[in-house]
Image (cartoon, rainbow, N blue to C red; front, side, top):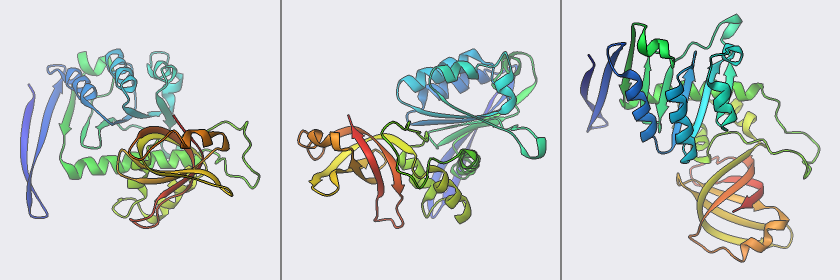
Length: 293
């Protein structure tokens, strides 16, 4: 039997409704509820998992990825050696998967899923068939804002620590045309929230996060605000991305012909290398080596 709790929360003088559902396996349809949440996600799914063998959940994630939902998975490093894990399959389908371990030989034992940074699924329930059909497990689904924010902050922090361990492509030598592009798997809007004034990360964590992301590549979609071609620096566009963040992108020289074919208000896909992030609410992200399509 599962229960639904509706909480009335007073936030800054405004009343907000938060819904929390409680499930117990194997009696309840916990997996069905999770798959429904994955299908409903529009922008992002962040998953932290100790074990992942559920084919139904994996297939739902692939469908979400194919419709444009950004997916990030943090898995315990032992999953890379688990022959029953579906994570290698997800990697083959192009999902962003990072393996992580606990400290001093410990494990990454989290089990939670965040949908659109608005709702979280968590509990003893792992993403396995045993959890759904045989084990006695518990799980909650909640959109209570303060709880969701805490889970999102924890995920972003672990993801940032993991990025910090990856050798940064920043070097004193120039980046050549043949050097591969390393995409960070974060949208500009999401990165802006992580580094912004309202972020729950400490200044040192923000600095570490930016140090890991700087000079790596991002991709996204946004609306062209303006475009120009400078004889010295080359073609440049200003884009307002889907999250409302403003980005200045210095394009590659061979993108010059696209400037004349674009107009203000046009929605385009972009890529670029991160150079600078906004220091104030009125400044912009700055990218170079950009491209439009």
